Image (cartoon, rainbow, N blue to C red):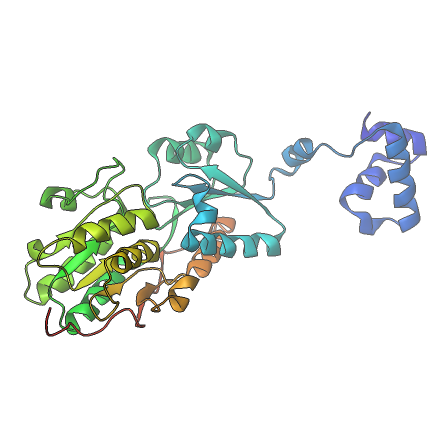
Length: 346
């Protein structure tokens, strides 16, 4: 059963039947009702969406490649805010949103989308290659810039530098670092100097560089700062990394966590050891997710505009013909109750 069949049954043009589905405002309510009723009686379900897509040359859908499993977009607070920013623009523009797992290049090859946002610290080479082969406009978010792609991110190094500088100004000289994974190999432990230099992930590398710059500018040895890496990324990794740091002697008096999720895990570790924050231990996160302001204590952290990041990335990929410079959004330190002066006894 086709659109032409319905048109012949009613004695109207195919364009008129098409308007009943695609442009109802062009028909009277009575005529549209008659067309839909006849189509239902004949068993016609409406125009084929795929055929309409091919005719238009676009699908009215935006793709988002997630570097982590797709569930990360819903479970991680920062990622969820980022997705909200994209969704707000899609809603305004009448676009569908398609999530594409970043480690499955086949999904990127068949996804029906008009453009792609790569929300991944470092895009999978095969998936990235597929996107380029298809000639789709794309934007990299939080990863390193690439020729031919838009780019949205923050100054990770400056944000991390501000976080470390804040603790140093409070008198803390024994810092512990709770990093995001340095590589995707699942390794755990205290990373060697070589592993800290050869970091695979862009944001991790820049944030660690910011911490290190602040420490060395204060006249302290970076090698004297404790770093504990745990995998996979998440709150539990933060708890286990912080537990290892706090078991050291002498114990760090302050911790720098590369995300609020890691910081929340570190708070769990401190609580399990009976350590007061900030009395016994100061803690700084990174992201400023909603829970950071309402925690006990409220978390000192580096704020980045997650929703705006998503919205600006979507705007950029929808307007690929406009010359756009890489967009660097602000990352500012927000001081709350999880940091305080180093104790005289520490």
